Image (cartoon, rainbow, N blue to C red):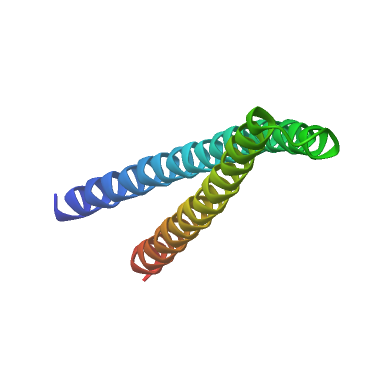
Length: 124
């Protein structure tokens, strides 16, 4: 009876370990997919902001080459402010992305560490 109980306990332990390994793998895939999705979205936003910045810069250049009337000066100043605001937004977004990337790396490192400890305990 004791052998049977031990075998059952060991089988339950193995089944639980396999289930957890499957859950861990699924979690890792979800984290990786989330990271890829976030990277793609951020890259798309960067491209869009870069296009807007280039369009504004072209407007500034066009205004600079024309005669200096009051309206042109105001429009150029507004365009320059918009370019500066976009560049500031790009800098902030780059910081956010770096922070998010650091968090993802930290989460993966913690997950890997926990997985290694679990495997050591399971094989001990």
